[in-house]
Length: 471
Image 1 (tube, rainbow, N blue to C red):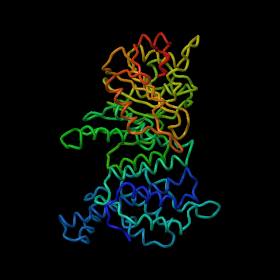
Image 2: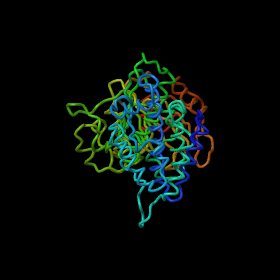
Image 3: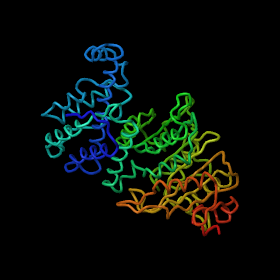
């Protein structure tokens, strides 16, 4: 029986993880999130739909029955129309052929709600292997009964709390998935730090060209709300993302909806076919750009040399062996005149080629960015933060409107971490410490150093925050 109880974060996390564990055994670790997340999302949609029907009954129609009748005739009365087959009470009554029923239910929701298309189409609760259902009827029955324990309506759980629980599940899935987790998950502390550094302003448009499950975009909105609240008189920020992987794209859309955010997320290959363009075919530009693309990707040189948007002319063509600076160039080309961007990359992206005789494409691109006074800050992160590698990463901040012209702030945060299992993490004090060094633009012994662009040139454009380089 559903309990009419307002859920706290701990209860919510434990409950949802209990539900996820029902199908952990029969489903491969990389895939079981693809079943549980859409089902949790459907539960939220159904419970909110019930709430909206009840509100319409109270305010207009006088009874739930009349309200439902009107909503069935006019779907515009509610944000998302949930057909009878997909309403949770109908789902909870099923005892046989549950996999087939759930698949039909989510497909029906997608058909009725164009905004939700792309979320449910890949889900098949009736999928089979060697002639047998991957998830048998008994497990699906148990899963539905566990999810029926609490409501996920608007009064039962706030969007922020549900969003945090959703991201808790993403972290748990990342822990179990290992190497491939980097495709969809950036550690929360890294997303918060980048959001604070970007410092979203009223009306900003924020873009992530490799958005994964949407964490960087969502934290940017939450950081904005911390600073400005939710006053309707203040222009909100808008978020845009592109993701190449279909299931990860679906996760990003769900993540935004669960946080009760409007987001424009598009599916596709950003480097080959950027999705956000202007009517004249030119590349669309944004106030802030943020990303954690896959590190050291290999793209054929034709991607750069035949680019119709001229994204890679500033600084020259990146090497085929690593797309790190290709991503930076794309993000830079997507920035407005006074825009700022922050990107997480492999540490080698700020040092490869420096000190070597002869030409090196990455160093040559870095040189152009430094000489044009665009590099604002480089932050060296601790080891073993990311789920797809134990290697440290860096946050590179590029700003077209630097407050401190001619200077670059190097922050060595490699020792600012708390040891965890299986991964290290930055706690809230670490995030605050690094952000305040950036915000206050200060040197702190053993942690940060301000250099002139001329010093970077003398070190052959090695921007690694290994402070001994600049003593």
